[in-house]
Each structure stands twice: as C-alpha cells, then as structure tokens.
Length: 92
Image: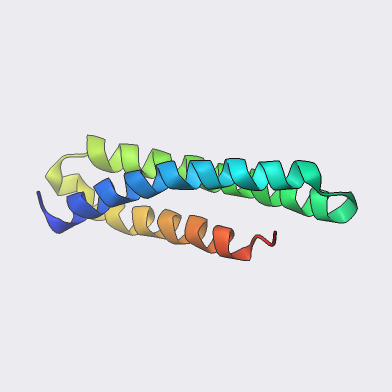
C-alpha cells in the first residue's frame, strides 16, 4: 500500500469519528436557544455537506486506477482540509 492509500484509510476512520462528532453537535444544538441554535444548525448542515463531499472524493479515489489517483489527490486533500476547517469554526 502506498502512502496516499494509507492516508485515505486514515481519512475513512476519521470520517466515522466526525460523523459521531456531528451527532454530538446536533445534540448540543437541540439544547440551545435562539441564535445559538440557528448558528449550530447552519454549521451542522455545512459539516454534513462537506462530509458528503469528502466521502465522494474518497470513493472516487478508491475507484480510480493508479494512474488517475494522482489527479484526484489534490481534490481529496482540499475536501479533507475544508471539513477539518469547518469543525474548527463551529462554536459550541
């Protein structure tokens, strides 16, 4: 397994962890009131979209042959960074 394939496997594991984190944030949003609740719901929606995009990029990477994977690497890493940044931006 090459280094990028190993990185994708780690991404998949983290993606599962992030799904649990999104659920925790949703539980917090349920307990919030007013603008905080609205902000959290918007943040959760953003996280879910970015998570789905990352899942798509991982699937594309895994389906591509070794020649096509290099072209997908940057998109995959960008989707990863976008989701990671979105988690950092959400305020509980």
